[in-house]
Length: 281
Image (cartoon, rainbow, N blue to C red; front, side, top):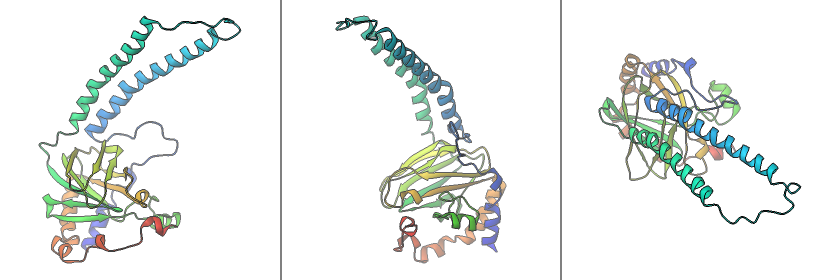
């Protein structure tokens, strides 16, 4: 009964699933403060600057091709240097980089502001799945593996191929969450573009980030660090619930993922199994 309850809560909000669409241009819709800042930095700083530079270089290139064509310049120029131009094409790029550095560094340091977090979760990368621990809610954990590697499996389960997982990482909305990340084997990378989070999980090291998700729904991500032959079969699926629904999910999850039973049971993660990459060959 508890398992069924967990499943019914986790299936809520499927219509709010956020995933990339064919021919999508630009960044995904941001749903966290960090993602909003990153989108603004990209849209209102980087994109205008890069657009101006691109247009200027293109116009200059076309002008040079026309102005110094062979028919108009039978005797080529023997200019060896131009001090003014050399100062300009060195100084202007430096100035542009300095201007871009200030908001960039401000945003970079904002990603480290994990203080005043309302809860902590721990993310452990494995070859080739994710483990999610809830130390503030009874210390149970969830292991999330890829749900469908073929079109047939995806249709049968009504999930997105190579994106869905058999267990979802469930988080509350409107809550500042400390994300602690490490790895049990090799370096992985927990990457969620909608959240503005992309961080390596390194064996023997605990990295920290934070997130505060505005909208309930289902969000997808991937391991973004080459970690072996099944690297492409290591998706991330996050279910974000309103606070009240998350509290109800926690109560049911404590029964389904009882930490005492999990500690006594042989871990599937330590079993030798065929990797998803081998399974689809």
